[in-house]
Length: 556
Image (tube, rainbow, N blue to C red; front, side, top):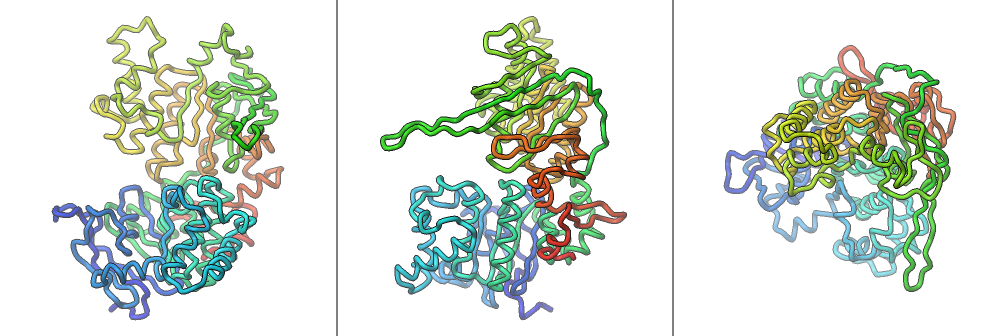
């Protein structure tokens, strides 16, 4: 029997590629959403969760068609609606927040015009009434001085502010159902928490139901009453969030929960040992170009940073977006010029043209956040890895090929991958290639900049194990830049916390995580919930502010 009070009812839905009856992307999906309910839809990349969410309002790509099944909204079958009726439904009754606001906001239209559009299409409000409503919602989602920003374009806002604008656009018409697809993936801990609390608050105020599509399990655990777990196009398990976390029935759900990061063992490093890399009073200034009516502006991205990394040590750098983490990594790797201070390698200053300059450049390798952007799309994996050995002139062709094959196997890939191009590999495989390229020349120092942030739960766990294993085997030192505190807790020996281009706190991992000295570190650590292992599953917990956080969560 189905629930007649359900707002949305999906019955035996199957999606596939047009003209290919056997190409099912979503199989036999059935579920119901009641008014005001918040339901999580979790699963790894490629599980079909985004396609399922988009198909509810007919926004899946043209090549993807509904092969069978039905979708009822307030009792009406959506496939029986005309195009005009569906357009009326979208926005007014069902809203959607997309993963990447920069690609879903129109770059050529001001924010004011983009927010006015749904009101113009779906309501009979006058221009001044529309303006009042827009300013109200912009205030509500926390955009400062909304009147002054109505004529700004999307690129003039930060990532967190753009996501708030997307949320404002979706909630402007107070829809009955909101579909949020990975709404906070690219945001740092503090902004992530603000955006989610805001989203939950707005849906509760308006009685809006929400489907939260995500691979972030702690976030889903915190905000969703029910959860649906998807794997390879099928919903394999569904039920109340606390029951599924405490006692998962399906093996796939158990594997997802087992892949969550957990604190690694404490390693000791002799304090008197000389640092491999040391940074003293490092400064980086950015100068914006002078325009026709604007003078060049100076911004200090790093101001007086002091940092050292000892042999075999993993030092993690954490902080909100714009704190200077990536700038620090790039300045140490000499990819951007510094404005002051010095970088020392093996207790010698590193300067362009100095005796140790080339030695440092060969011994300092970088793993970038986006392997697709950092691997040349025209080159095979063999050529990409061979290029990293370019400066080892005395290597014979056979020896070079052997090093390439060894590096590929070390990162868990096979010789067959060597003849592939980057686009022929998955995200996790590309990240493995990026790691192989960094370690093939056997460097002393590796900088990993958000090296696992784009990966889903189980692939991330595999890549982290791989990094830890390689680091143990080769003994290189590592500067690990991340906004994922769970990953940092698993991997780091020491933690450096940055804010506004400065270090606000640094120390041994356990000391920083368990007894932070700075209010900012405390706020950062308490922004994201954690999942702690139990005998049968996991349970939701918070750092430091359990009482305050519990008021918003479903498990109190």
